[in-house]
Image (cartoon, rainbow, N blue to C red; front, side):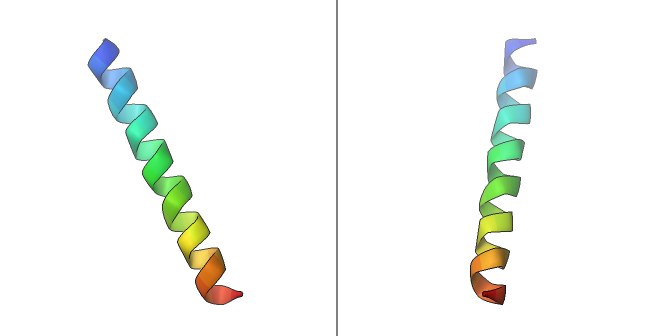
Amino acid sequence: MQTEIHTFVNLRNKTLQWNLLWISLIV
């Protein structure tokens, strides 16, 4: 259970980082 939550948070953080990267590229 704890590992699943950790993985989910990791995935979310990576997605946020990718979104920021795309935004910085577009702008």
